[in-house]
Length: 537
Ligand code: FAD
Ligand code: NA7
Image 1: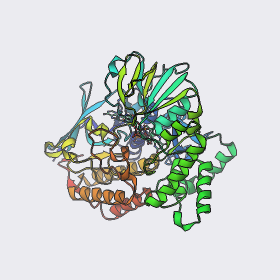
Image 2 (image 1 turned 60 degrees about the vertical axis):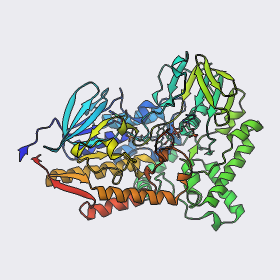
Image 3 (image 1 turned 180 degrees about the vertical axis):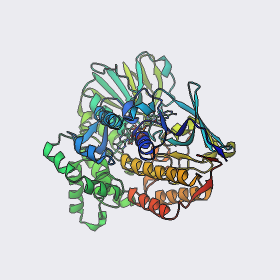
Image 4 (image 1 turned 90 degrees about the vertical axis):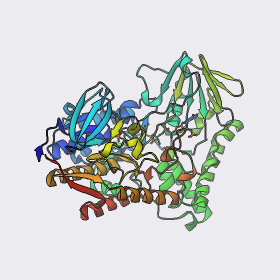
C-alpha cells in the first residue's frame, strides 16, 4: 500500500446551497482539506445567476433556508411571505461569511473533466483554464436547474436588440420604456411577466402551452409572525423533514371524493386565497396528482378563475389550459390579471409558431413581425443531467457518464452511480422532488456519512449496478402511479428537443426517502460496494 498524495481530500463542484453546505460538513465536521470550484464569478448558484425582474423563490420564506445552523435561524429574518432573489443571495453570502467558507471557494473556474484513476482511487479534476487537481472524493453540486436551455430559432444571431436568458440576466439591462418579448411561461416566465409588465412599454408573450397558475399570496409579514416562527423552529423542521414535498404545510389526507361538491369548491377557494402552488396541489386533497378525476376538479376550478379574470375572450381562450394539471405547480400574484393590461400582448406559438428572429424582432407564421428592443428567453433548463453532460466524466474502465447514461440518467438514491467510485452527486438523477433545500441537506449529510465511513474503514465506495437498476425501477413505478408523466416538462426531461422522456425524480417524497436512507445506514450501506482502498489515506 502506498500513501495517497492528492491536492485535496475532496473537491466540490458548484457553490450554490448544495456545494456550500457540503464544504462546511467535510471541512468543519470531518476536518478535511476541501476545495470548491465554481464557474460563475459569484457564490449562490441559482440565486447568483437568476437576476431577472421578479426572480424569487416560490417556497415560502421560512422554509427556503438551511436548518442546520440553528443559531442563524434565530438571527436571520424575512419581511415577505416569499424571498426575492437579492435577499436569498444576501442570506447565502451571510452563511458563507459566518462560517468563513469563502476562502475555500474558487470562483471563475469551470470544471470540464473528471477522470478516475484506478491505480490509486483518485480523481483528476480539470478546468477550462487547463489546470488540474487531484482528490480522493468529488462531490458534484452542479444544480438541477442550471444548464441553460436556449431553443435553436433561426436568425437569433442577427437580432440587433438584446437577447438574454433569464438565468444569465445582465445587471445593466433596464426594461423601462422598452418593447420586450418573452418566450416561455413556466415558473420563471410567469414571474418575469408579472414584474416586467409594470416596467416595459410593451410586452409580447410568446406562449407555448397555457399554464395552471394560482396566486402566490405574497405580501409583507409582521415581526410578530416572524417571531412566532422562531419559537417553533424544531417543530417546524421536524414537520418539513417528515412531509412529502417539504414545503412547510401538512399535506392533505382527504380525497376529492371524501367531501361534497360544495365543500370541495370551498377548499379550492380557501387554497386560492391562501396562495402557493404546491399548497394548492398537495395541501387541498391527496389525490390531485394521482387521480385523473380529482385532477380535473382542480383544473376546472383554475380554468373558471381564468375565465373570471381575463377580460379579452381571445386571450382567455389562449390562456386556458386543457391538459392535466400535472407539471411543477406554479404560483404568482396576479398572473392572469396582467393580460388585462393594454401593454401586454399574447401570441400562442402552438397556433402561430415563431418562424424566425429578424434583426428587429420576432416573425410568426401569420406573417406578423413583432418589433422588439429586448428578447427574453424564459425557456428553462436542460434539467438534472444537463450540467453532467457538459463535462467529460470518465469512471472505472474508461466508461464515460454519457455511455453510462446512454439510455437515460440514472443513479442510486440520486447521490451515486455505478462505475464512478467516490463520486457523489447532490440532486443527481432520481432524487426527491420537493422544496429543495431540505433535500439538499439530507443528501449532503448522507454523502458526508459515506465519506466519513470511507475514510475510517479505508474503503472506496461505489453504488452497485443492481442497486442503481432497482432504484430506477422504483422511481419509474412511483412516477407511473402519478399523472406527472402525462405532460411534457423538465420533470421528465421532456422540455428539450431530442431528450428522452424518462423518469428523473423519486416522487414518493422526502419522508419516504429519509426512511430509505435510514434503512441503508442500519444495513451497512446495502447497495454500495465498499472495497478496500488501494492506497492509504
Ligand atoms: P445551484 O444553485 O444551481 O448551483 C449549482 C452551481 O454549480 C452553479 O453556480 C453553477 O454555476 C455551478 N456549476 C455547474 N457546472 C459547473 C462546472 N462544470 N464547473 C464549475 N461550476 C459549475 N427550488 C425550491 O426548492 N424552491 C423554489 O422556490 C425554487 N425557485 C427557483 C427559481 C428559479 C428561477 C430557479 C432557476 C430555481 C429554483 N429552485 C427552487 C431550484 C433551485 O435551483 C434549488 O432550490 C437550489 O438553489 C439548488 O442549489 P444547488 O446548489 O443544488 O444548485
Ligand atoms: P420551464 O418550467 O421549463 O419553462 C420553460 C418555458 O419555456 C415553458 O413555458 C416552455 O413551454 C417554454 N419553452 C421552452 N422551449 C420553447 C420553445 N422552443 N418555444 C416556445 N416556448 C418554449 O422553466 P422555468 O425556468 O420556467 O422553470 C424551471 C424551474 O426553475 C421551475 O420549476 C422552478 O423550480 C424554477 P411549455 O410550457 O413547455 O410548452
